[in-house]
Structures are given as structure tokens and as C-alpha cells.
Length: 292
Image 1 (spheres, rainbow, N blue to C red):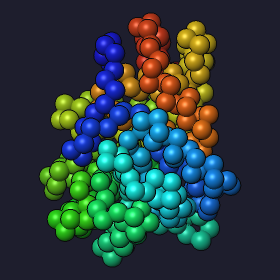
Image 2 (tube, rainbow, N blue to C red):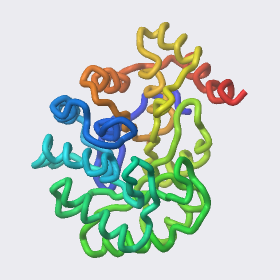
Image 3 (tube, rainbow, N blue to C red):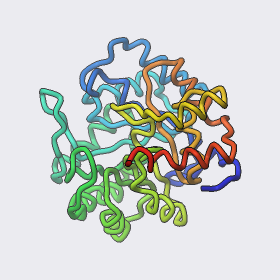
Image 4 (spheres, one colour):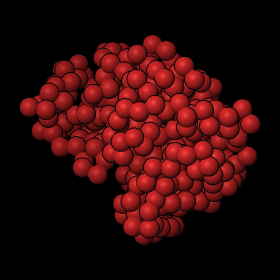
């Protein structure tokens, strides 16, 4: 990990975005299913994020489903020229809110068109193909067939850039042989660090890495080390966890999600939090403690 101050921006799909972005998943109802409890509040959070300079928003049409994309369109369309909206495809939701693989040619084509319609776009900035061989984590399996479909849609002008999500190193290597990959979105945070080597490899090649669940997701991070460092710095543990990620590698782009303006402001303030060297040394051990 570099001890220099982290850069504030990185390239994503031919554009430069701020490294602290926003993830829209939490704008849907409980379990990322159904409408938000307070639609007005959800719209306000999106507008506040962009007003505060966020220019990278992560979403998907299977959040809700359709809910978050429709909220983004209502809140922000017509979009600012510098705003990069990243979506993902290859899943659908059951009537009970279950997550169901949707990786057939027909389902992938429909998903791209649904995202275009609900976001009010003619072309999608970045589309992540989410591997559904493992629902809640990566599992091996060839992604050639679905990725070939997405590459066709790119050639048709419906998609500008392609990324991968929930994937193994072997799948990333396979994907990079098939088309240009601009980002990888996997589970990673200060306590969940299986992708350490992968992040460094992607950084060398200028490919963005976007950790989902950067604060633990449905099971928020808990660490006495995080709490101790936060108390010493006058910050929250979650701000420290985000600041650590920004220091971890220059290609990491953060998309912490929230449905609260106060929490949004707290997350964005993490970008200005300086971590002294002794704090970084202690924080680097959190994963080892968690695994013990």
C-alpha cells in the first residue's frame, strides 16, 4: 500500500471519474426489492450526490427491479455531461425477491434495452456482466457466451464499455481475451481481501476495480481496530474503512450506497480523511484478525 496521498480521480471507460462515487442499490426497498419507503428522500439523495460532485453512479435494472434506474432518471435526467452511469446485467428477480440467473442471449439483450429505457439513455456508458455461476460470490464457469452477446451490443452502439462483476481471475483473463474490460466489480473491503493480488494486477494495466460491499454490505464491518483508529482521528469507523480503500490502490473506485443525505455526506467526507502510517499498519491487519 502506498504511503503517498491517494489521487482523487481515475479513468473509467475513457472518462475520468472521482474515486468516491455512489451506489444506488439501497434506494430500493428492503432486500433491494420493491419501492423505497420514501421516494422523495431517495430522489433528494441522488440530487445531493451529484450536487456534491459525484460523477460515477452504480446501478442495475434488477435493483427493485427497475426501481433504482427509474429514480435516477427522475432525479437527474437530462444528465450532466461528466456523469458516468454504470449498470450490470445477467440476473432477474423472482416474485419473492429471489435472485435468478438471466444469462441467455435473449435475457441479456432485453436487459440492455430495459436499462436504456428506464435510464432514458440511447447508449449505456458501462455495462458489467455479472457472473451468476455463483449467486453470492464468484464461481468458475466460462463467460464466453454471455460476454460475446454483450460485445455484439457494444458493436451495435448500445454499450460504450464493458466490465465484469462477481468474477474469478480465470474469468477475467477469459474476458480480456474476448474484449476490452474497463472495470471489475467484486466483493472487497478491509476485512475481505481475497482479491489483493488481482487489484494490483489490474492497477498495473489501468483497469478500475470497484469493490461492492466496501462497508460490509448486509453485515456491516465490525472491528475494534477500526473503532480505535476512528476514535483517534475523530472519524467514524466506516469513514476509516473507506479511506483505507482509497489508500489501498489507485485504481479502486468506491460506490458506497445510502438512502440518507447525512450518511452520504459522511461517506464523501472520507475522501478528505488522512490516515497516518501507524494507522495504516494497524488497519492492514484487520483481515488477518477477522480470519483468525
